[in-house]
Image 1: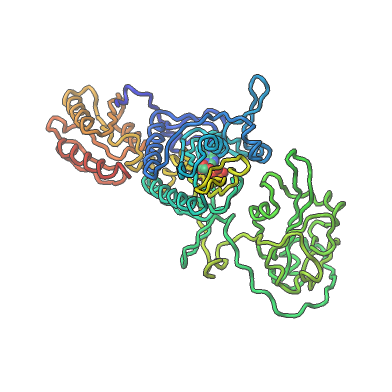
Image 2: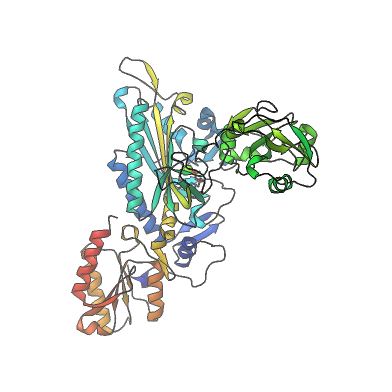
Length: 579
Ligand code: ATP
Ligand code: MG
């Protein structure tokens, strides 16, 4: 492609709305354009990268025997009613109506459609197992679209579904996808880590997220360097403190004026924070958004409440719960802002962290202004509606597997895999007849890759950008080689550039020829910004057949005969293009 023939525009200024390197650089390089909040257009060079990522995904899915199909992004509500998710999906779903008032959604994911396809096409065990996938636009009306393609309201996702006879078969499919995902992200040039994950709204029992590691990521993972524990912070289990063996002392009410925080009360009474109980107060909402019930959650004073664990314990979604207005809650439940404890609360659901059960003689709010209770003990003084692990595993906390201090890292979730079991096949009637002619539900798995998110995450890897721009890995680069012609119109330079251009094209190399009438400085800046892996500069020594050869990733420049430069370029492209 000659740059003079293409729609090509780069920008010097950092766009106002962009905060992270990948978003800034994609906008500056003219690879994407913003259309509306969370909605983007891929420009020619950006789209070439996306198509290469899609191709890598295709190759790895096909290698595991999955078959590609393409379903409509318009999905009728009836299918979602059958699975129970029409009401449950919440405000992220874009809901629309046809001219006759029939409800549809723009697919945020496609478990229902795939289950529907399979239930009408499969009847015998002989047809199982198999996998189907698609690479299509998905739509989610995200509460906070941001970071460009990282969290957009319309994005490209590869979604894959496996269909097996039993649990064992499902685990084989899951393992195949685990390997395929590892290959995809390696080939795309990501530094990533598979981590155990929460199943969220999809349901099912095991799940891994593939997290590309970078400081700008929205996900936080906890991992252990002494064993192989790695999990999202939402999911990471917590090892409870050892139960106390001392006796229960008599509970006492004490005056603690103005001590509304754990810190204040612990200081006032001369206690450790770990000798106190922290209260967090919530209100939940039903599917129509009406207030449902008050919830009081209790953890040890030095712990952090994990919202994912809390909503899972309550069997609700994140958007169905919010912090309670303490004054309103007081009327109904007797709680007192800053002085709430589990003793004396009424008419609200009490959820207690599991380790509190074994700890003795703790200090908690007395549900009375300026008062706390000391020597509070579970079982004797209060009980709970639910007892479960509610804690967030923080950096330095003991690893739930081996006890060594855990570490945290940030990253971007680029893919997630789930076992679904019969969660969709039972309510939707996706069944088959086994060898004994007995009707059984199909075991399913589902597997997603955020293609457009991956596109951006690649750039955020520290090795894939610098202060001058993007450094594309060869496997996904929009072009392999850029010929930077210093002075178009100069006879020798024109002739040599053309010769190199044609030679590279004939060897199957993707070449961009910067033949624009621009200053050399502008051309070098643009070549760096758009991140083409190999640059061949045709300049003053064109008459002798000599060019400058440079890799975007390295600082060295070498003068080479044009034939050598072509040979070098072909070699490196051949070596690296598969990723
Ligand atoms: P997140 O937790 O980031 O909201 P998710 O867990 O809801 O994502 P999945 O349902 O697992 O997402 O979707 C599969 C993949 O699609 C994700 O791993 C992610 O890479 C991508 N993805 C999800 N939401 C978005 C979005 N709003 N913009 C871009 N990519 C997305
Ligand atoms: Mg996910």
